[in-house]
Image 1 (cartoon, rainbow, N blue to C red):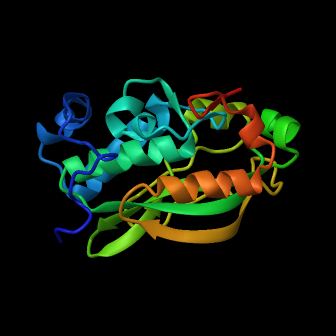
Image 2: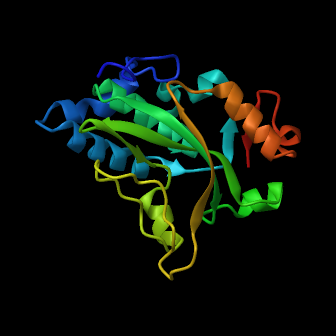
Amino acid sequence: MKENTESTYFFDYEHPVIQELVSEFNMVDLSDQEKAQQLYLKIRDGWRYNPYDISFRKEALKSSQIAQKDHGHCIDKSILYISGLRALGIPAKLHLAKVKNHIAVDRLIEKFGTNELTPHGMVDVYLNEKWVKATPAFNKELCLKTGVEPLEFNGEDDSIFQEFNGEGKEFMEYLDDYGSFDDVPLDFIELNMKENYPKLESLLNEAGELKL
């Protein structure tokens, strides 16, 4: 399957920093499923989840730029994972949704009056002749601090959210599914955020960035 393996402006996996990111997986004999699993863990835990670093600058959403940070929004981390997968020849695309979340959103509630995250980014991965979902957003350290098990991905089943925390309390739910995208729909992301967070535009700096 050749679709969804190409490089794009955002999934710029020819860049040396992305090639370095996936180089270890090309040095050993691994199946695509094993590569997808191991890269998932590398992205999940190697970049701290930060839902407050939002940018509508095109260059800020290039995988090569995200890779050089130590944190990322769920969309950032999804872009990075997709780029790495495509670099390994594994088809992948961006999937967006609206979720009600209870992990590390105190400032979101304070600033925007809601614990709904939109659009929330995850990844559709093509493995073993089927599409499965993976969500590399929430790093292990953050999950353990907030009393929820880190989200695993086995390459066989959808891995999209932790429904309950360690105490059995409702933790996360999906409210809307915006579907999958072959490339990063920046205009849709910007419009969606501004429609759902009316205060957002007043908080953006001149470069179109929010850093809380």
